[in-house]
Length: 157
Image (cartoon, one colour):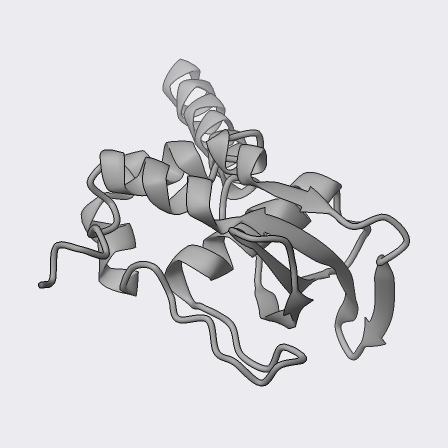
């Protein structure tokens, strides 16, 4: 009987741990350009898919992740912003990326939400919450180059 109780406790602890870690997972999101910003800044519109409301931190996290690994298309000038790094870099440097893109990780320092740009759109499975976010592309690239995540722009020549 004691063995069964210990096994059940172990399973419950593992399940709770897995659920807690699930909050660190990058949310499903869409990203697109949202116009031109100040020098070194990039304006993007991000939509995060969720069943309940989304915190500002999640929107900023998705914006920085998108700028680094996806790039964005379709801003007002028609210009494309290429990704800073390939998606394989994220898996190759998983320890750094997990810490950097944690819900309250360092990625929050590179993004700010433009006030009065929030949106909520009903979808079939919940909502998509969006906002226009300003990403400090220059500082982000510089710090990721120092960390060895992104190659320097001058290294290819």
